[in-house]
Image (cartoon, rainbow, N blue to C red):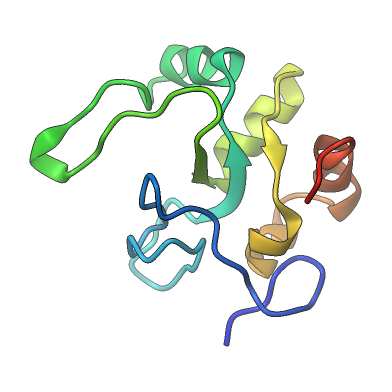
Length: 122
């Protein structure tokens, strides 16, 4: 069973919309996941605009891929390097630590994830 950044069992991130590289609701990763979709994040208008400007439009639906398009408040498994880029730009979305894959720690410090999580119920 996969672990989260806290060292316990990885929890589900979202099933509505269905997220995860494997579309199983969890931020699991594997050899085919070159983007490392490991950070369970709560979308904000600011982050969605940032991501679109960075070349990854997450708000526009793509029916051919079963992608509904995201809106503020949706939880989604983000690519770890995009989350880190948003952190460096000062607009990291909130993180669900229990649903963020442990491999995220290879790229981002736990303290930064916890800081983005402050004030949440996660």
